[in-house]
Amino acid sequence: MHAAVLSSSDTPPAYREHPEPVAADSNEMAVEVLAAGLHHLTRAKATGSHYSSDGVFPLVPGVDGVVRDPDGKLRYAVLDDTKFGTFAERTVIDVRRSVLLPDGIDPVRIAAAMNPGMSSWVALRRRIGFTAGQRVLVIGATGNAGRMAVQIAKLFGAAQVIAAGRDRTRLGELTALGADITCTFDEIERAADVDVVLDYVWGEPAAGAMIPMLTARADRSAPLTWVQIGSMAGPVAPLPSAALRSARLQIVGSGIGSVPARDFITELPQLAAAVSEGRIDVRPRAVPLADITQAWTAAIGDRLVFVP
Ligand SMILES: NC(=O)c1ccc[n+]([C@@H]2O[C@H](COP(=O)([O-])OP(=O)(O)OC[C@H]3O[C@@H](n4cnc5c(N)ncnc54)[C@H](OP(=O)(O)O)[C@@H]3O)[C@@H](O)[C@H]2O)c1
Image (cartoon, rainbow, N blue to C red; front, side, top):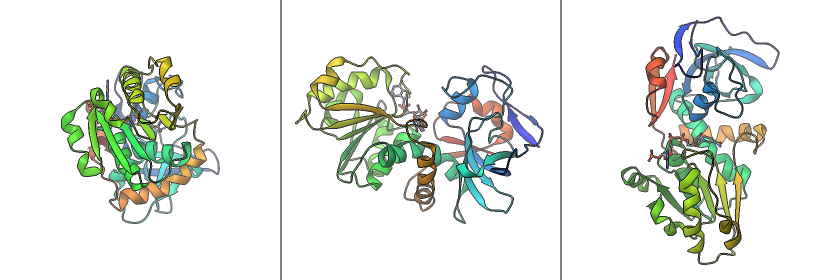
């Protein structure tokens, strides 16, 4: 069979012949891969920059995907730390980390949506006590995860969703997806009175937004939960100490580790249903797996989904 094989952290994967994967125990099954997304996590794990990667090569990248099991059923599967990922014609999944998908789903849409969509879905459902009627600010709202966060917050009954980012044109598109207000980072005071921040950016922009936002709050003693989810602007943010004193701010993170894996798995079917029923808009771009060498280094925009 064919797979994308990564031989080092600084060269793109090559599409080539690869030995068949073999299930190691009764929880595992060899499956046919139908579609697998190129997420930030995929690259970070593959190139050794993610906290869960060990930097040992060669490996087949791919952290999740839509697969067909030996009974012909479609599943969405999340792989554990493995050297044999989903960027292959076939891979091995742990059945306990997979969910059955309804008939008629589009594998490419699901493969594109589940990783970015899960970030806000799980943050709001499992990491914090979000309740309908609260107001939500999404920082980094123009990306795949941010666009979905805007829609998911609305789906969960947010009273107001504010979309923040650096690109006014892309921000403008979010109104049609449910954003009540859009703003750039230097207009962040417009989001002063939210209850929850979903932050995909971190780094200087997030740290710089805190004081202007907090000092503009109508009631600084009202709780504000800042959920750190992604770090597109940098892994380190120079947090002003006054931010933690001047308002009732708490900062938490949401991701694998801060939310148990079983909680992620439990939420997967509902997200898959929302995506396949069209309640969440997704922008996938299907690419043949054979073209991975060129696609691996392409700028990330619409979510690339490899189809073996
Ligand atoms: N913890 C979790 O559960 C989880 C799950 C999925 C993803 N994530 C993380 O979430 C983040 C976003 O993922 P994604 O799939 O949405 O990525 P994406 O589609 O590539 O979007 C990236 C977003 O970050 C913005 N951005 C990039 N560099 C920036 C900078 N220097 N300053 C300000 N904004 C910047 C982009 O703005 P422009 O539109 O202006 O370029 C865009 O809004 C990643 O860090 C990813 O690893 C976390």
